[in-house]
Length: 130
Image 1: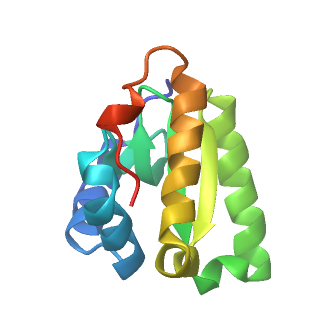
Image 2: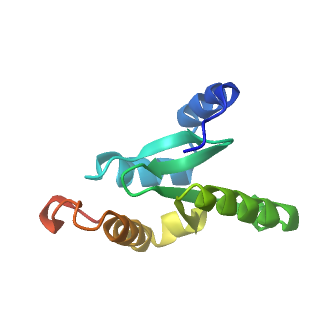
């Protein structure tokens, strides 16, 4: 994997301390105790991913309203393409999805992790969807 930029580590630490409400909901409500390890605000190359699962090579991004702006949409697409060139899968959800459709968001993350981990995935008994 592409090496990360040391100078963005303090920003990643700051983002961990000041998660958005949607990030807090997803982290404390699901990913923190997920049976396959996730990290939050993980530096990957020149980027900071909202959530990252190394085992599944999965990046989960939560997007607020500013991500719908014209310039931001192109920037997000370029970021996704760069991460996918590193062999990672990127899935995105709107912040509002986390609040309105939390079980669906959790279920989609679980489905993608299971798909990408194949046989190396904890049994259904150890997973708990909200």
